[in-house]
Image (tube, rainbow over all chains, first blue to last red):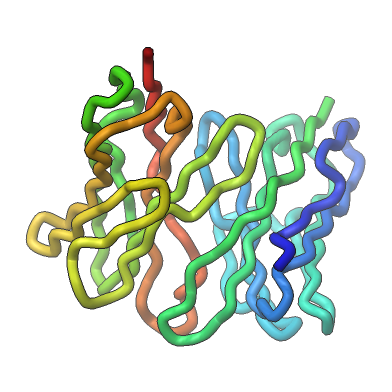
Length: 114
Length: 116
């Protein structure tokens, strides 16, 4: 079974621009979560989607948004990019069954804001 | 609110030596516990998880961890490490309650360096 895929893998944007990152979960997984990883703050939870609805949200400003499609694929968008948004953005999917809530991560999208 | 403390930011060891990576957590509710590994320029790979049952959990690549509820710890161990175990290791927790199962709180990570 194919793992979680994320596109693009690398991205360079300019301050003030917006960006959209894509995530395809493992087949059959309906929960998709997003995390930001930076050297200073470590791994931080952004949000989680299930059945096209945001179910959990972390402490990030409204510039960070996401959505999930009916095939469970997810996108996250960051508007008005700031230098501090440079990070590795990780997507994870989960089966969402009792006793099977572990998350499987994709390789990430490395975003550089200049 | 939950928090995870990984007590060592870096752990250097020699090949074939045993290793223990320490993790303590704080939470007002019951939690699930996980260890993930991250190799350079890659995502996170699940090593093992504690959901319920036996407090000694075995994972992939010869790793195991023991859940200690009284000490709120979940230390990761391997009896004999290999050069290929060099990576960053993350301990994580999530709330057991239904809607918050998928919000992982991570520690800052421990960089394990295995030297020949």
